[in-house]
Structure formats: structure tokens, C-alpha cells
Length: 637
Image (cartoon, rainbow, N blue to C red; front, side, top):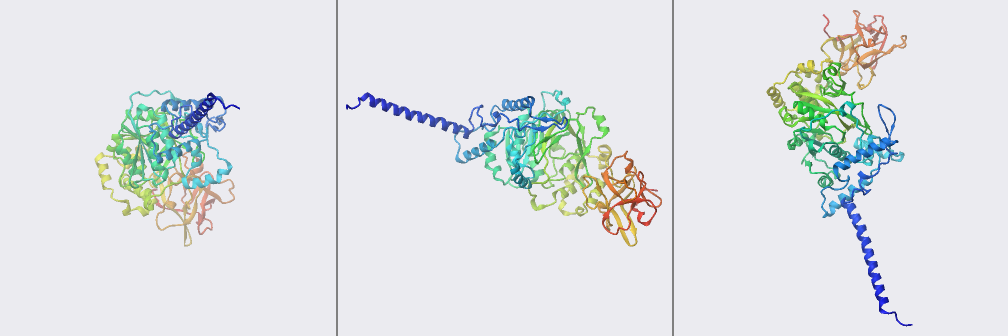
């Protein structure tokens, strides 16, 4: 057999070259795709990038609080989600997860960060949490979730399954949606303080501000790291900010733990916007949140504003909201805590519209907007306060007493994860709330500080409170009004425990040589409870401070006594419930026989044969020694 001619050998050689080229092309394509995935350079149709993932609408299911019907199983809901995603895509011009400023020359550590970030994006379950829906955790994950909540004070597992760019329904009142704002508004610096915050809620806060704030009104976002020591908040966060976020996002790192108050001061010092807006690091702003705040400050530079703060459930991450017109404003307790109160009728009449700026005596303190120059003019924060606590009431009283106003803006809505405890420690384990509130009381509450110290007698003359002379000088310099003025003009509904009352103090009954007093028994006053009897203290403890008001309420600060009189033949429990002026069951009289008689039931407070701690009760009035009660103080002439 003759050897093969040369042309056959050349053909095989060419085929081998072609095969090698083909393999190389495949390698280049695959490698290029992997590189693009790693570097975040995939095009806008790449399904790895979250923003273009098609939502899993079967998972988008929650209940509208007003209509009580399922959301997320019809074309209208699908359209809502896609419209929201399109808005974000049109605004950012890049899919979420795609670096904005990334060089191809990544070092090894940067590649590691990028891989971690892409892995986290890939762990997002499409549709979870969309339109504010709850995230449903599998049964087998329940135990792990419970352990995480004990550590983080919220469901981090659910948060990590949600997009950093999750969609939210427009929760504003229809009246708000019809308002047209000035195109020339001041620019805002948004300041977010964090210490050891979890990754996903922090970034979701940032992205929600970027996505739902008109670019022309957002000057900058300033992230202030209060000396976090968690690994994900170190180099990885630096990398994310510089490569995945626009230049208007800046990260400021503090070299030692400052605490919320002083960290906010550091953030404010670096701000350059006309208005500074403080947000917590676990928030989500909603559509149209920014414009009403800026517009109101443009009208009145001394107006300090808070949005309506909606609840993001700490376990399911569901976004709860009201109808946009019913909301509460800030109050306070004599123990120095913030509380929510109803908008009084006088304020509803004054504001005119249900979505108009609504005056609030106090603010929660986590979220508010203020003219940047006015912030410094009116005294910023008390630098003598440590970490957290009391600063919100201090600023609230100061704003009102020194010529400004504090207002809730109903057309601005921000969601907030309300945690049941702080997932971080306080330096020195000090009672910073108590000490800070004592500073506030010394400077701003005048003689009414007596009611605070009744609750916290151990703080009176405590050297740890520190020197408040500079803050008193500030008050004099600003020509601020008295706390009496604040009570009369800003919150006239506030019940003052020892004013406008018939009798007050300990309510004592003595049978033999054993005296018992009405006492809360340290039961929570957040909900109705049965008041009790306890041996009388030799000092005025807050748990035994009871007033008989001019309106004939036997009451505490917010709770009034009533009688469970369904069975008049037995001891009827005396129950404390929220005070209502027109509730006849809450009326009591102190008779000439010293009986405390409930007007509706006609039963009298009775100690019976009780000699120690027990629940209080009322029985048929008979003038016995066990039904005779005496107050420490009386205003009856």
C-alpha cells in the first residue's frame, strides 16, 4: 500500500490546528464569562444580577392592613413589582451587584470580597419580601432563626433572603400623592450611624435612600462607623462603598467607640447639605419620603421634622403601615421615657389637613430632619451625654422651649425594624439612659424634675451625671422659655401627678400596726393590670404614687382604676386601664368616712384581712376599718 500523499497529512494538520483554536475559544468565552461574573461586568440581561431577576410572585404574598385581602397573586401585583424594579434600574443604570467604579485589576483580597458579595446576591430568593410582604421561613430553619434573633435582635436569616433593593408599596395617603412640590428644594445630607450592624439591613437602608430619593435633592449619604469590630464591616464594607456605590456615599470611621450621640455629631460635622437627616441603620424609606421634609424646612428653617415611622416586623420583615392619615405623635413619661400618644383634637383643628405638618411634643429620636445651620445654632446634642438615651427628650424640649417647632410630616414614610433589645454593648455597662435623662432634667425641666427623681431617686446628686453648666449657659443664651410654658402650650393634656389633683401620694390603710399601700407591684403599665397592696415604704416610691384627680380619677400617670363588678357578691378586682374622661366606671369619690368608692359599681376599696402583698379588690361599702384610706397629701380645703 502506498504511503498517503502529502495533501492528506496537511489536511490532518489543519484539522488539529482548528481543534486547538476551537478549544481556546471555548476557554476564552467561559473564562470571560466567569471574569465578568466575578468583576460584576455582566450585561443588564445577565440573570445573576438581582435587579433583572424575574420575581417569584408565588412568594410575594402579604395582607393589606386596610383591605385584608391577599396581595401578590394577580397581574396587578406583578406589574407593581416590575414597575418598581424598572424605576430602580432606570435610575441606577446598572443592575444591583454590578460594581460602578471597579477596575479590572483587582488584587486577591478584592476578588475575595467580590466573590462574597456575588454569593450573597445569589442567595437572595426572588420575590421574598417584595411589596413589603413577610418572609416565610421553612420549619427546619425555625430553631436557627430563634438563635439568631437572640443574638441580633431581629431575623437576620429572613433579611439575607430578601433583595437589598426590595420593592415597597406606596403607603402614602392619596392626598399626599396629589401634592406637587417645588422643583427648587434644599439638598439633604443623610447620616447613618452604625455599630456592628448586620450586613443586609445596613445596605438595604443605603440602597433604599439612593433608589427613592430624587438625585437633585440628595447631596450625600454619610455612613459613620462607630468603631465596629465585626469582620464584614471592615475591608469588605470599604470595598463595597468604593466599588458598588456612587461617589455621594461616604464612609467615616471613628477610631474609638463614641456612642450614638457623639457619632452623630461627627457625622454632622462632615455634612455639607442644606438639611441633615438622621436615619438608623435598619430602615427602608418609601416613595416620596424626602420631598415633604425638604419642602417644610424651606418654609420654616426652625421646624424639626420626623416622618411617620412604620414598623418593619423584626421576625418576618413585613412592612406594616396605616392608611396614611391615622398616626400617633410623641409624648413622654415622668420617668423620662418616650411614648406614643394620640393626636389631640385641638391639633387636628389647627393643622387643617389630615396630611398637614402635625405638631409633636417629642420625638423618638432615631429619624429626623433639621436645617444644618439651625442644628448647630440651637445646640446640636449635649456632648456630655454618653452613648444613647435621653437625647431625644433633651432635643425635643430644647427645640420647643427655644423657639422652634417639632412636627410629624404625614407624607414622609420610613420603615424601621423595632428591636426588643440592643444587640451591642454599652461602654462600661453604664446606665446611660438614666444618667443622660438626669442631665436633661437638670437643664430643662425646672422644678418638674422632682417628678423624674421620684422615679429615679438614686440619680439625684449622682456625680456621674456630670457638669451641666455649659448647657444651662446655652439655655440662657438662647432665651428659652420655662418648662411650665412647654406643659401649658405644647402638651396641655399631660397629667401632672401632684397638680390639679384633689389628693396625691401614698394611699394608706392601717389595721392594727400593719400599714398597707396601693402599689403597682412592679407590673407593666403598658397594658391593663390589677393593682395591688404592699407594705408602705418609708419614702415616696413611684410604684406607690397615686393621685385622685380633679376629674375624680383614681390614677397613675396614664392608667386609671376601675372595678370588675360582674359579681358584686365577691371581691371585685381593681383593674388599671387607660384613662378616659367620659368613662363613668373610672370615677371615684373619697367619702367623709374615708372610703374610696367607685361611683358606677358603688363598691369600696377594701383591704379585708390582707396583711402583706396581694391584689387589690373592692367590696360592698360598710365603713369598716379595712375600707378607710388616707393620702399623704391633700389639696381639699
